[in-house]
Every structure is written in structure tokens, then in C-alpha cells.
Image 1 (tube, helix red, strand yellow):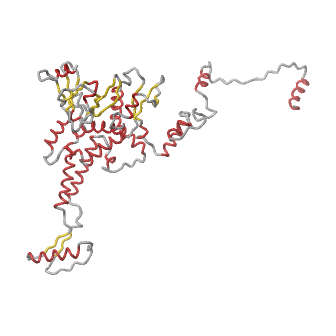
Image 2 (cartoon, rainbow, N blue to C red; image 1 turned 120 degrees about the horizontal axis):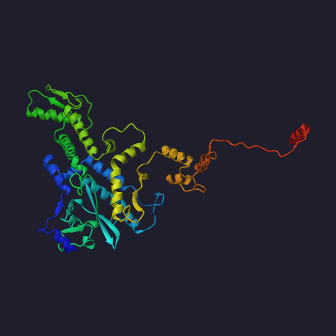
Image 3 (cartoon, rainbow, N blue to C red; image 1 turned 30 degrees about the horizontal axis):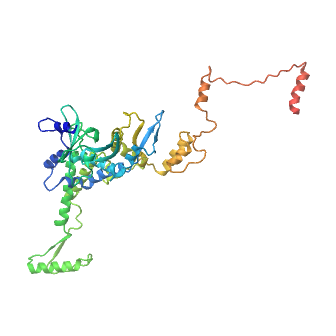
Length: 454
């Protein structure tokens, strides 16, 4: 089988290789940056680094659960130690689930693509490995089959690919069939199988951001504005040294604020209180603008990474919901779908299992709002008291597994029986029928008085 695949990629057989995302970065850097700014410097600039790490950390900290759905499509977490849970808890021998998700998200953000290699034992996936996306090329055969060409680097490789897929003798390039790969990508601007990173869109803003910081560093290191200038008319070298040494001796090392008395018509011009120049103000504005542009490409509110003012809305849940819907939701749902399909579960399988993130760790409310929300839910009979206690990490109590309502509230089934009558709004009054024959009015009076005597 492998020899057949190998022939497809031989030089005499036409196969289409989808270009990697790195080539796009190289073109942008060559045209928009100087030789003194590298791709690594751009990625490691503070604002871009903050965007990358914030999204990565917020996703990797979320619990990843295996869930099942009942006949009513109500979902519950599967805690059984089955093969799927084993992979989700420990994807491979050198990463836990948090580190694995961090590698997944960082690869997708930096390159637009994440390639996860599946290690099968029989028909079951036993382990998952995130590959270096810069060394993967997607290839399409003339018949439309998809394969992934992976350039092996023995000095950086943590996975023995030969134990997972069949390799060539030289092992410099491994050709991997698509069934062994989970390919997650987004922003497929040029090709359905090639994602584009947001870094490509904010490359110019990131370059400007780095240049501004480099300029400021050089300015304050070699050409910073002095605190003042000493002006001495008809200055010779000997007098200049004397004035300079006397000034340094008297006013350095904590001598600020003393009275300066010099001869030789020395004049001092103070520059420390001249304020910020127009150039300085422009640099600050340019830096803020470039930082905002970087945040915009990642759909992150600038205040989340320390750029701009904090919003006046005093509602943590509202801010978290906005961050989730604008920034994280697409990434999270894509990981859920890719993992479910990659493990052979989900909607397209015969199982009722799926992979899902627990968003409670992200969409946290403040304590007062959370208590009020749970109180309303319990009082309305929507959730049982023990379900509300579980949200607060409290143990269940006896009798708390059933939703409650007040006694005067009618059930829907009782109201339905009332509405099923011919006239649902007719009020029936009970009448007492007395089966007794009275001979005269005196008998009626005696009968009524008997009730009073009792």
C-alpha cells in the first residue's frame, strides 16, 4: 500500500501541494520589514504575544468532557474509564490534556493550521500528537485523495513516526494518509485545506509596533534628552572639564535641589520640564493604534491585553460572554467537532457520544449574581436544590433532588384537565339536598333549632 502511495508523489506523477502558511509570512516580512526585524521578533512583541497566550491559556484551562445524550437530547458527562476518556485525559506520553490543547491552539493561531497525528491500535485511537505545522504540506493526488507530507527533523522529533505510519527508508519525509490526521484550520482564504493565521493580517501593525519600541530603546540608550544644558562663553577645553566635573560632583548622587554657584558666566538651560514633545506624543499614539490593530485581527477587546481604557460596564458575566462569543466560540466548537470526528464519535457515528468543553470555568458570574440566579431557578421549579448546590460545589442534601413549587401553584396537567371541559370557566357550586318531609312550619322551625342545639 505504501509503495502505491509513494508512486503518487514521484517526480513523474503530478500531485498538487498546497503551500504552507510560512511562505505567506516570508512574503509579508520581505515586503514590509527591514532585515533587522525577524519573524520571531514580531511574534514575540508584547501585544501580539499577549493575544496569542491569552487565547491559548483561556482555552487550555477549560475541562474537556466526554458527554452522552439521552432520548430527550439531555446531555450528561460520561465519567466511565473507557478508551475515549483515556485519550482525552492523557493524549500522549509526554503531554497532559492542558498542554495538548495549548499546543493545538497555539499552532492554529500562529500558522492557521493544526495537524494532529492519530496513533491507532486496531480500530481505536490510543494517542494523539500535535505536529509542527511548519513542516507539514498538504498534498492532493490527481484522483482527489488527500495526504500530508511531513518533513522529519530528528533533532526536534518527539514521536517515532515509523511506529505509527509506514515510512520511507531515508525517513526525511513521511507521507501520511488523511485518516491518520486531524486537520483543524480557519480563515481558509486561499484554499479549503490551508488556513491563514491572524498574524498574516496584522503583520504590518506588528512590525510598526516592534519598530516603535526599538526606536524608543535606541533613543533612551544613546540619544536621550538631557535634563539641562550648561552654556559657557569662550569655552576652552580646560574650563569645560572643570565646569563639568564641578557640576557632576555637586549635583549627582542625590545632590538635586542644591544651589548652583559658578563663575565664568556659566548659564544653565533647564530641559527637564519642557514636557512631552510632539514627536513623543505621536509615537505614543502610533503605538496605541498599532496595538489596537493587532487586537482587532484576533477579535480581542484591547482592554483585555492592557491596551486602552477598561469599560465602564460593571458586569463580569457580560464581559466574559462578549469575549467568548467574539473570540473563543469558533475555536472551541472547531476543536470539539474535530476531536469528535477524529475519535470516531459524534453525530456521524453510531454512538451518542461527543466531546464538549465545560464553559463554567470561563463564563463565571460574580457571587451575588450567581446566588440570585440560582435562587430564582430553584424558586421557579426549574432546577432542584441539589442541582443548584452542585453549581456552588456544595454536597447534596436529603430531599433536594426534586424541583419544588409553592402549594397554590397548579401543575400543567391539572390546568390541562380544566381546559378540556366544555366551558373551562364554569364554576360549580355545591348544594345540600335535604330529604325530609315537613308537615307544617312548626316542623321546619324545630328542625332548624336542632342545628343550634348541637
